[in-house]
Image (cartoon, rainbow, N blue to C red; front, top):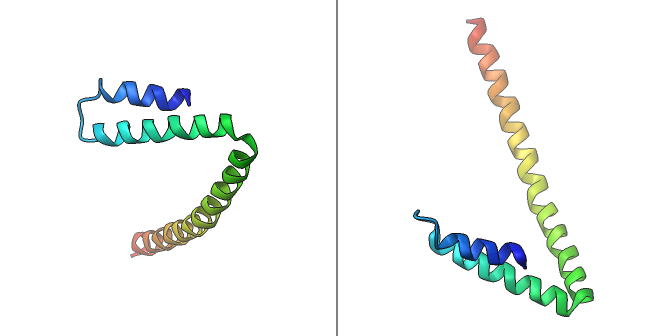
Length: 82
């Protein structure tokens, strides 16, 4: 909740293209904080779901990135030998 307020305040000091995004994220973060304070059990369950979904998305992305790095490393090693 506090972070959301700071992001919201910082958005008015920021002079870039992401200013509107900072305002929106700040408001959403503050509202989420208020919700968790008012409904801690539901907030905890929602947090577990968000964490699980993040893991399901971030895991395959990390594997794909690792495979790409390995492929680029093998290509680099092949090009150095020539």
